[in-house]
Length: 323
Ligand code: CO
Ligand code: CO
Image (tube, rainbow, N blue to C red; front, top):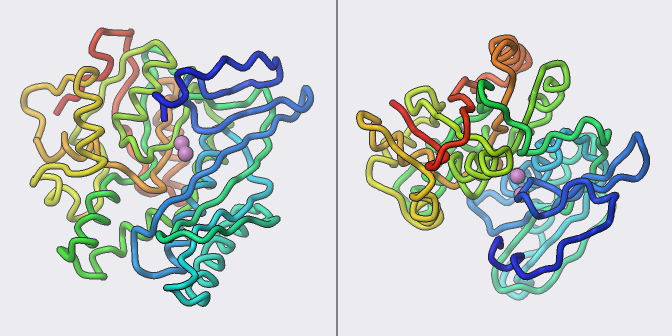
C-alpha cells in the first residue's frame, strides 16, 4: 500500500487534518472548529469458521481505527464480497448480524453497504466517526520519556493460522476470539483524562510494524521490553517455531529498523512481528501518568493492558527490543 501511494500527488486541502502521508489509522477531515470526520475502511477474508463471530471480528477491527484516532464511530457501511453460487445466503446473514452487533455496541449506525460477487468471501466496514479537531490522537505525538502501553495481548495471527492448519482445537481459539471481538471503545474513552501523546492500533503490521510507524511519524526511538508484552495462551509456543506469511513479511521488512538485544527470548521476539486482527491500542503517555492510566484501563475491564516500553530520542535503528 505504501508503495502504491508513493506516486500520488500530496493533498493540499487545508481541512484535511490527517491524510495518508504519515501512515496513520484513518483520515481526518475538519468540518468546523469543533468537529472533524474520521474515515476508515477495512475488510478481509474469514479467519475463523463461525460466520457470526467472523462478522463481529471484522467489524470490531474496522471500528478500531476510529478509536485509535480519538474518535467516536457514527455511521458504517457494510462491504461484502460473496460467492453467491457456492454459499448459502444464511451465512452472509450471520456475518452481517455479527457485524451489526459490534456496530450497535459501539453506538454506530449501519446505514447501508455494497455486495459484489466474489469467489472469495470478504467482509468489513467503512466507518465514519467524529472527533474534536483539537483532540485527535495521531501516531506522530510521542515524546522521549513517554511510556508505552498496549491494551490487548498479541498472538491472534499465530493462533488463527495454527487453527487454519488444523493444529489447534476450537476451544484453543476462545481467548483469541474474545480478544478480537472486544472493541477498543473502553480503552479509547479513558484516554482523554490522561496526558496521551500518540495512539495507534496494532493490526496487520504487528506490534513492531505499527510501532515503527509511530517512531517515524514522531521522530523518536522506541524501546520494548519483550517479557512485559502480553501474549495469548499458546502464542509463544507457536512463535517458537518461527513465523510464516504476513508475520514473516513484517519481520523481513522491519529488520533494518529493529535491533533485538542479546538475551531476548526468540519466541517473544517473533511474537512482536505477528500480524494482529482487531488488535489493541498502542498508547504513548507521559511517564508521570502511565501508572494511573494503566490502573484506569484495568478498572474499566481492559485487563490485558500492560506497560510494554518507552519512547526515546531518535536513533538510527528506530526500535530496540530488550529482554
Ligand atoms: Co490502524
Ligand atoms: Co486499518
